[in-house]
Structures are given as structure tokens and as C-alpha cells.
Amino acid sequence: MRVRAAWAGLLFACFASAADDAPGWLKDLTSVSLPQFGPKVNLVVLFNEEHTTVAESGKLTTTTRTALKFLVRQGVDAAFLEEYDNASGKVRDFRAWMVAPSGKVKRYAKEEILDIACAENNECRRRLVSGKRDIEVGAIFGYEATVERQSFQNQVLFHFQDSSPVRLARFLVTVPPGWEVKTASFNGAPKESPPSGATYTWQMENIPALEREPASPGFLTLVPWVGVNLLAPSGRRPVLSWNEAAKILADLNDGQAEPDSAMASKAVSLTATAASEMEKITAIGRFVQQVNYVSIQVNLARGGGYRPHVATQVFQKLYGDCKDKANLMRAMLKAAGITAYPVAIYSGDRTHVSAEWPSLGTFNHAISAIRVGPETKAPAILEHPKLGRLLFFDPTDPYVPAGFLPDHEQASLALVGTPDSGDLVRVPAGLATAGARERHVSATLKADGSLEGSFVEKRTGELLPDAVAIYRSSSKIDYVKMIERWVGASVPGSITSGVEVRDTAGEFELKGQFASRTYAKSPQPRMLIFRAGLLHHGELRLSEKTRKYPIVIDADAIDETVRIALPPEFKVDELPDQMHVDSPFGKYDASWVVDSGTLVFKRKLEMQAQSVPAAQYSQLKRFLDTIGAAAEQPVVLVK
Image (cartoon, rainbow, N blue to C red):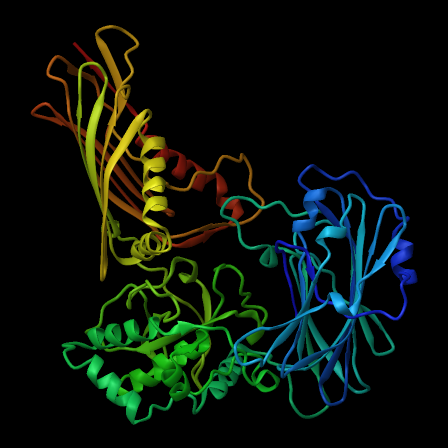
């Protein structure tokens, strides 16, 4: 499997060349003229050509030629290339050169190559060499690579860019006599040109840079790309429907989730005190979540990286990757009398999978779909028309409890693998539950405008994992500093103290105190003005007037009560009006009430995970601006 992506370090996999000079195609690129690019553009792809030749056996030989020109010194951290050797493919040739602005050429030699195992068992190896020290402004890095690999699904695809501008990108596919191709183009990618013999070509020129917008999909979702199905006259055919893909996924997992006596015994002990189906799932889920994550590819030639190790091996060694952990989860549930199915999903961008391109290769993650009865209730349950009630669970995430899904997986398209009833489904978005974040703030405002207070914030459900992950991955000092920065940005001039955390199973509680000498403003001697929303919520803010790409929103919810004891010398002169907003994007309520000398401010927000089309940007921005401004509404006191 070959990966090309943005990364730090400018590492390139390469082999030694027989000649020190650059090839003609690379030399020709040193004299091309380029337009003026904006200040955010660090490099331009002068040329990117990928030519895949298909053998009668289905083996693919792909030759790549790429040249990158660095426009600024910062560009050295913007490119990364790896070529992998594993069971499904071999790097047969790789030659790389750096052409300085002076015309001097450096060829990367064999002794500069690092040979590194991808995982502990050496099933996959990669070769890397750093060219960072050789970069100058105006330098060109070029490489030629040839990789042979066995086709898994008789499918190939090509992205015309990552995010940098591209002068010329070309994709070619050559098939044997009698073979056909069936293609699909996305995001403005061209259709194939009429074939020249048995070679099909797609080409794009002068592709502008992609600029990331806040809360936008990933670049690979947005850039132009084409997918090609390779149709042989006979024998294995490509995946042409999601039902076929589901059958393949089920076949790759067939026989891998059989528990042995040791595993069955462990499942029985874990669920011995469980009083319900959900408690059994939770107990087994906690155990599998703690299995160490190690990415290991197995039998790539047959399964393209989707076939897990047998569950008994993972159980014995207590490590594996996402598909291994999901498979172990299925096996242990089977020992407890509960059925579960393998699920392929894309982690990190719920908009990435296209329903118009049936392919296992579009996914990067594996989870489980657990068949549950009517008594089991949870946000991550989907009513499937053929398979019944399915509870989706990600055993790789160490903090998300059973019944919930990580934010970045909610509302995603996923493939449920079964021999006959599997298909592409959209997993649940979860409930927009305000109780997921409950915050209570108590404070005292004095006549001189100073403020002292304390806060308690509890997180459960879908908002629990992020809080736990941040806390456990930080040192105590760093975590306290982070909370101090948050409170300091919320309450100007404040000092934070007494930060405490209670991190228990299924609940996270944060406490702290704060004090500010100059919180309320006094534009006149007998007046104080302040806002009742003391602590920032951190809701999404969008400032751009227009939008080009969809907006990807994670679930968000808060139920907050703020009580501020007012100085007895003052009375309330102005209070904001109560607010109620009910939109397609979420619900928001806010109120300000004075009760026995105490101002009580309440707000409640409920938003589901969702992807909003760019055409609805103005409506979404209006909603977000409204809820963002609510806590900033001024309260006016006079003597």
C-alpha cells in the first residue's frame, strides 16, 4: 500500500540511481514559468503523473513521476512520501533528485536510505531518506517510483492534488486486451479522454491551491479525483455495489472471530454480575478498549489490509489494530451469546465516503455493529431494516463508553459486513443531550467591580471522551495551566486557583475558583456593566462572509446555571430579554432572572453532529452568532 500525504520533515523513500544527473523530464521543468502565488502557498506541484499498467493476472505496476518546487523555506515541512514493501506490493525502483536554483543536481544515494519496520512483526517495511537539509527557495525535488502490487478489488483511484497548487497532473491506466474500465469522476475531475490503444488518460492543469476553511472536510474529500474499476473478460471482477462490498468484508472476517475456551472463560467472568444486555456489552467493551493498539497489516494480497488476525491470537498477545480489536470484540460477545458484525468506517471526516463509489478502499477504520434487543437503549443504535437494532461501538477509542460513538464517526457512512444483508448505512448522530455537559458557576460581584467565584463542570456521555483524553494525556502542571488560560480568557484579569479533577468511570468533574479585580466596567460612578456568561463555552465561531465547502459540526451540548450575588448598593437597571432559538442546526435557550439579590443566568444548547451544505452557511452562521452573542449580553446595574 502506497501513501502520499502532508507531513513534517520532508522525508522521501528512495533508491539509488545509476546516474548523478537529473532525467530529461525533470530538467525540462526547471525552465517553466509560474504565476504569482499567494503568501500562504509554500510549494507548487510542477508535475505529477501516475501510470498504472494492469497485467492479465491482475497485478498492478504503477510508475509515478513527481516534481515539487519550493517557493519559501517553510515549504520543506509541507511534503511527505512513503513507499511500502509488504505482502501485497514491492517497491521495484525509486530515484530521487534535488535540483538547486543554481542548476546543481543532487542524487539521493543508497547509503542515505533508512529501512524501517512498519510494525513489530516486520510484515511491512518502509524506506525513508531526508532531503530537508538540501532545500533552498526555488529548489525542485523530483522522483520516479515504480511499485508492483496485487490488486485487491480490481480498483484504482487518483487524487489530482493534496492542497498545494498543481501545474499539471496526469493519470493513465493501461489494461490488457479485452479488458474494460468503468470510471467515476468527483469534485470536478475530468472524464477519461478517448483511449489511445489500451491506455486511458485523465489530465488537469493549473489547479489552484485549496485553502482550509474552519470546520471543513479533509482535503482528500474536496480535491478532484477519479476512481477506476477494472473489468476483466473473466475471473474476479471489481466491486460495483455496496452489497458486494459488504459480502467481501464479511468474507474477510469469516472464521476470524471464533472464541476459544480461555476467551469464553474471560467473557463469562467479565459479565458475571451484568444484569442486562447493555451491561454485558459495556463490560466486554471496557476490556477490549484496554487492549494495546498496534497497527499491523496482514494478508494484504488477499484482504487489502481489511482481514484481521484471528481473535484468539489478539486475545493471547493483547495487542492489535482497529480491525483486530473490533474482531476481538465480536468474538468475546459471541462467547457471551451476543451477535456482532464487522463494520468499515472512515475515521476523521464524516463526509469522506461517497455513496457513488462502492469500494472497501474508501474506509480507514474498523468498528463493530452489535445486534441488541428492544430493552437496550442508547444513542448509537440504528434500526436496520434487515438486521434489526444495531448498536455501533468503537473498541479502539479508549474513552468512549458503549452506547456512544466518537464525534468524528457520528453521522458517517459505514459498511456493515454480512453475506446477504450488509450494505452502506449512515450511523447514528447521537442525541443532542444537554446533560452531556453540566456546569454550575457561583460568584459574588462587589461594588468596586471585582468578582470572586467558583465553578463545577461535569461531563458524561458523548462529551466525556474528549475531556478524559485531554486530562490523561497531559501532566498535572500543563493541565492546570490550560484551565487557567481558559478561565483567564473568559474572565478578564482573573486569577485561577484550586483546580481539581475527579475522573471516574463514566463521569468527569472539573472544579476551580477564580477572582478578578476589574470584571465589571463602570462607565459612570453610579453604574456597573457586566456579562453573566462568565466562562466561555467554546462553541464554534465562523467569521467568513461566504463559504465554499460544507461545514462539519461535532455534537455539542451544555446546560449551565450561573448565580451572581449582586452588590446590595446596586439595583438592576437593564436585563437582556429571554431567548429561544429552534433551528435545523440545534436548539438554544437563555434567560436572565433576579432572585433575592442574585442574578441567575441559564443557558442550554443542543446540537447534533452534522454536515451542513455550503448553501446553508448564512443560516448556520446566523444561528451560531446568536448563541455566541447571548452570553455576551450586558447586564446594567445602577446605585
